[in-house]
Structure formats: structure tokens, C-alpha cells
Image (tube, rainbow, N blue to C red; front, side):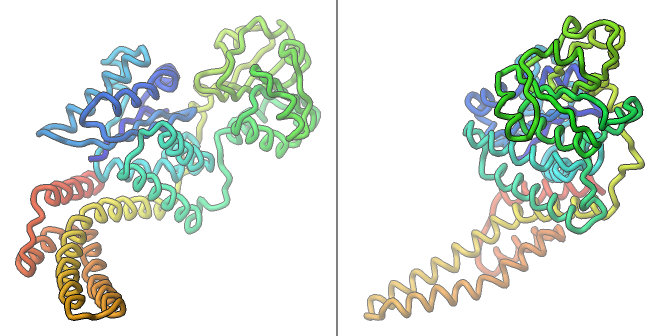
Length: 419
């Protein structure tokens, strides 16, 4: 069973998101190692959301509720958040609903700036990290690969294609009301990761040419050389001459004493955990634009996604769960037919036939299985997997048991929730 716990800009405070991003990833590793019911976990943490996708072995009635509560308790402890606070700050999705949610997230439909084009890469990297940690599972691999495929389909076939929306670009749009001329502004970027690269691109697109980079971890020189920037070693000295400071790193927190009172400077904090102490906004002359402010101004209608994008997400979720429902029936049918083929091959070998006969029989079996396999998937999408199971029992004497019934219920519940 798939389970998703999400805390995001809609249902959780920035403080909760910040604490989760720091403490909860380690908790998922512990859950996979120590909890018998958690078969796999993938954590997605961005500047405006924290999500844990879990592959749950449900051994008992009410397993979903037990699993969700165990995960909440583990993450609350790891993140130093009261359990009740976290319980009211997360939304739980399961089964087909969890799949639909991830597909919508990956496509940018659940982002602060709807349709933003950075989230799909973050989803891919979340899966890569889970692979390195050894916490993923076959079901989660299939889920995340389908999410990437769905996102690509939406961008290629809807009005979201080519819009190049991102949180960085939206933050700079807000900042432009404070910046008279980007081309005449001195900009200091704090950070040297992927997000910093995106930030440099977006600032240059606004016309900025005087861009410096500071790295708390000492990587400024290499980053500056790669991007044609000027590295700086003393942040306070650079900030004293800057018009704009943009932070996007996981390595530092900028404090108020780094800014000279009276010097007018706009500070944009894109980090989570936050890179800038809120007290910086109290320094005379400093204006702070952080994620809390950005999300208050995030456009809702202007960036609303087309209805066909939501339809694609719904169809993809139905296909994903239908494929899961169809798998036991297809496997049972193939096993039954291939067992017959193996028996015939054994008899043919006893009569002295060669490899050509064996190859021909296996090819014939594949041809005969193709059409019913396709039809089983089609019926699963239509919610008629019970008819498939009944037909297999009547025609082949195959009983698929409770597992297939549970998957069918999962799909029906998902359709009911999304109807």
C-alpha cells in the first residue's frame, strides 16, 4: 500500500517545514530499518513542501491509520515538533490518491507558483537519494517513474509547456518593484548549488551584469569561474556594497550583524531551512523578502493550470493503480499458460525435437497471451477487475485470493476520493 504524508505551503507553517527538512529525512531511514510494515520510503523536501512517500506492508486491519500515526510520531521526534502540531500540519494520502498527488506535485500543479519547472528535477533527485540510501522499493520506483512520465506528458500537451515558471523567477518579479534598474544593480548570490545556478540565470535574464558569489563552504572560486562571476571572500564587505543579496544555500545562516545599518539593500531568502535570520529585516535600510512573504503574494488564478492537466493526472493515477490491480491476474494467466507450454516442450524434447520447436512454442504462447493481457489492463482501468478474476477462475480454475481484491478496493477508493 502506498502512503504519502505531505506538509506544504498550504497546510503547514514555514517553521514546521523548516524543522521537517532538517530532521525528518533521517527518520525515514530509521522507519525502513526498524519498522516491519515499512518496505520503502522516498522523501521529497523543497523550499515549500516536505513529503514522505512510503511503501507499506499492511499486515492488519486499520494498518493505514497505524502506519500513518507511527510515521508522524517518528518524524515529530526527529524534527523536535510536538506530535499534535505535526498531526495537524500534515495531510495523508493513500493508494490511488497518493499516486495522483505525486503526479500533480511533479507536474507543478501543487506548487506555490503553479506550473513551476523546477519541481520535476527535485522529484527525480529525491528518488536518486532514496536509491543511494537503499530505502526505495519496486513499488516506489514504479510510482516515481510514472510521475516523471506524467509530468513530461503534461508539459508537452498542455498550456504549461514552455512557461518556465519557477519560485526564483517569481521572487525576482516581486523584487523588481523595489529595483529601479537591474542592469545598474550589484547582486551578491550566497550559495553554489543547483539552486544558485538557477538564480544566476534568472538574475541575468533580468539584466543584471554585476553579480558576485559568496560560498560559506569555500566553493565560490570554482562556481564563479564556471558561471563568469566574481567570487568574494568577505560577505559583510560584499553586502555593504550590494543592492541585492540572494541566499540559496544549505550551509549558512546570515545574521543581522553582517549588514551595515543605513545601507539600502534588498535581501531575498530562498533557503529552507531559512538562510537569513528574520532579525535582518529589522536592520535600518534592509528589506527582507523571505519565503513567508513570497507565498503570501504567490498568484493563484494567474498561474492556474489548465483543466486538461488535471485530467491527465487523474488518468495517470487510474492507469498506475489499474496496472497494479491487473498484475496478479496477468501473472497468474501467464504462469498457467507457460506451465502448459513447458510441459509440451518437455514432451517434444522426449520425442527428439530441437530448439526451433521450443522457440516456436514460446513465441506462440507470447502471441496468445498478448491480447488477453492488454484486455485485462483495459478492464482494470474501467474498474472491472472482479470480472477478470471471475473469468480466470471459471475458465482456468485460477483463484487470485485476497491480494487482488485488496488492490481492487484500493482503486475503487481512489476513484471515489477523486470523483
